[in-house]
Length: 73
Image (cartoon, rainbow, N blue to C red; front, side, top):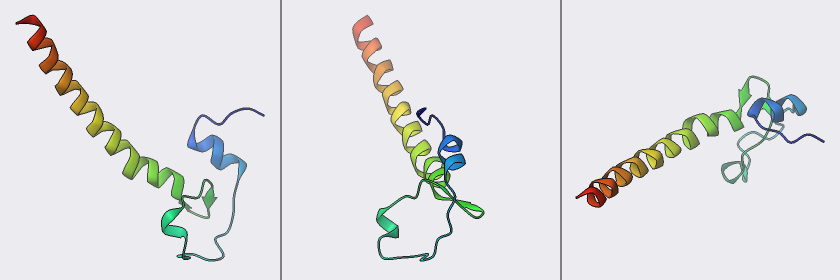
């Protein structure tokens, strides 16, 4: 079986109907499939993970610039 590399790879394999929306455990879990017109996996990736990665990258670039200035001086 080929490994999934994108959200679409995962979503193309699964589709479900959420019979218990807003269930007790929903806040702790991220479903990895399409539910009608809502895609929780894509939402989490786009709205939570990408901004976090960008903040981390930005901080790393700043740290690298500071380090290179220190090394050059």
